[in-house]
Length: 457
Image (cartoon, rainbow, N blue to C red; front, side, top):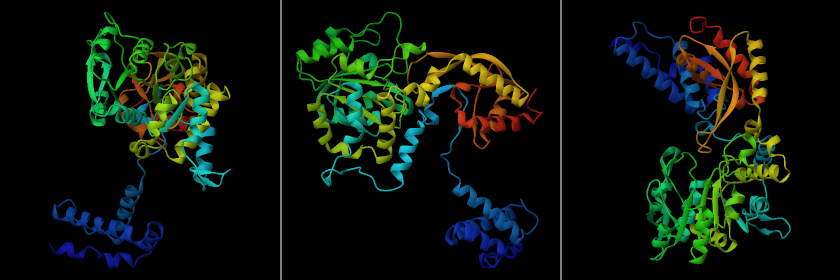
């Protein structure tokens, strides 16, 4: 087709002021790739009869600029969580405290004593930074930090149960978000899974019978994201710990959420705490750092110093160790607990301890500023695989709309995106999970969407 030859060449395009601006902004190699791709795009349009004219140099370069912007547009961006789910796994779980953010900034801006003993002037250990705080908080003999709780489980199994039998109640063979399954992790670690009991009923005698053959570990997992009700029974962690100690078998408790505070104080069901698991006699306890603990993504293992010493020397420990940014944020988070300021400083606990009246006050204020919406009663969820079915009373700012799903899509296209939910055919905004510093952006975004009268009643 003769018209294809009329499309400006790369050389011709690069001799324009617009191309010079793009090269200055994006660099020559990147711009060259974008221009070539754009030229091929227009050639394809002409071949398929989608265009009936030859694009100008400016049109090609403006299209190339959009290509460059798309290529460089980050996919990991801040959002406003207006869903009311406190630990929203898809939105990054726990937001960090201001002190944790400041610690990350200070640590990332230069060199730090990650593995340097400043007193001795010799190589040190990164394990000391957060672990001394964890042991003070929990009363454990020793502790270590890895990059998430799944890694903690894998390390424990690989270290103490490779090619050995691990006993676990059949009712605790759980799967959490992302397809993480306890049985699969056990297989990958080299451990031999031994299920005891039935789906709904497991007795201590089932564990005792399994101990007739050699065993590497007794494993206890908290039902973090589901409940079994009705005709059901399970041995307590304390009972399993006593059995393990009589038989000289280590007992491991995976409690998942990492709660250090009693959730019952906030009108929720009681979530097992790290301290309680240790007091029950577990030899090792592992948990997440970015759930109810309210810190960065991390996994922690606490317990007997002799067992922790073996874990720290295992080859896998290096592969799953935390970096300096994680340790900085985690240390700052743990400090809040030691200073008895967790409820005031850690966003997760700020949200959980927030009262319905506080939510109603914010929702009414937002409605008055926007000039639209109604305040209704609702429920907030904890999320993040913690406290299944437990809800907190709240008040919502609700908007009756014709096309709620379309409105949610428009909200997601705001800068920053607003993630809301639908309830009774209304788009609802839950104040509980909207951070105070995001309130202005939320109101601007809502007002922009409400201008579209075709979608709002």
